[in-house]
Image (cartoon, rainbow, N blue to C red; front, side, top):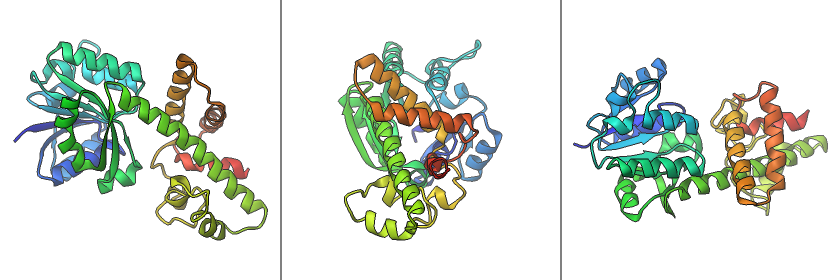
Length: 297
């Protein structure tokens, strides 16, 4: 059986790796968090002592990490330690599910090719709920051949696996998606904050707006106001499905891309300022829908 290495067993990576184990696949997981590793072992996965040990003899290496610097460190190694590129066998396929900048995706893909490895950028959408349910959407950048090799594995983890184009296209799609999501969430939160001031119940606004022209994922599935959507973070004290600090990280990636490409994104610029303020006020660990609390103030 082909061994899969899974690096990053956090809020997203943990349930993804466990779903691979449930599917009967051989998975070696690694995370710097002992608690995350214990949880994975309890689910039936094997735990590696290091990134290099996880990648050894693995013909598929999946990474789900917070930022580009972590992906680089895992792939290339750091502080004199070997990285996954050093230990994985020739021809191994790297599937990076992290949200990183386009340049990092392209550079690591080129380095992988130079070493006789394969790599795709495959960021995901769907949140922790989607990771647990196996209903994520993957947007993949890489060659047609590498996409074809990765697709059966990604289909275990999600219900939509889409080829966005060559290397870096998946990262570009995710940056654009999350930039739109941030603006969308703020707009929905503003609507519910205004409704509260006008004496309109959140449930009534939800019943109307969720079937009207303002319907969207941030409203229908992830309502930022407590009450209407029982499973939304707003009904769990805004425990992070997707932390505000991570949304801010993605918005900064988007702003860098806007600047380097000469694009214009004034609403995303405002959204970046709002999430920066939230982070400065200590709200970075709350779910990004908690922007509603800031607007209510």
